Image: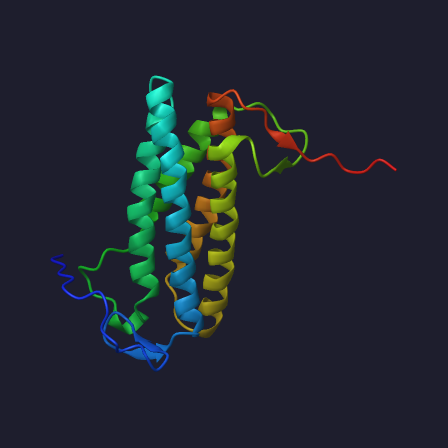
Amino acid sequence: MPIRINRVYTKTGDRGDTGLVGGHRIGKDDLRIDCYGTVDELNSVVGLCRLHTRAQRAEEAEPLGELDAILARIQNELFNLGSMLATRAEDLRPTQPVIKAHHIERLEHEIDKFNEDLPELRSFVLPGGGGLGAYLHLGRTVCRRAERLTVALGRRETVPAEAVQYLNRLSDALFVFARHAARVTATAEILWQPETT
């Protein structure tokens, strides 16, 4: 799919509306814009995670190399998901990159694989567990927000089922990746300690 970006600003959105893929214009405060804007925010958080996976790889003979490669792939998939959400169902093109069942199945496989070596949890995990773990948990929470918004959009308009399914699995994957990162970097996970009084 050839892409040319010659101009960064177009001034076409100065009145508070924006163009979807396919040319339809809607308000910038529309729920659809909130959905793919939150997916874009999530992609930025995954980019921050990769700063840590790549730095860690250099320091520790690449124990996080596999996770870094997965996160790189996820960034591309999130861009495809954003493209799906920026397109009304009737405007989706057959050649447009989209999230499909095999993307979701691959995430499930990775969740199972990474979870296999993790210690059993006997409490809830609090966000933290080192810099990488904290960013992965941040990504998980942004992913859950993107999922909620996409569910809400799906109640109003046609949204491919794979969009919600992918976000649901990805949030689980980010949780497992955060636990994996804590183990690989020998950082203690922070467990919830409910009040006993």
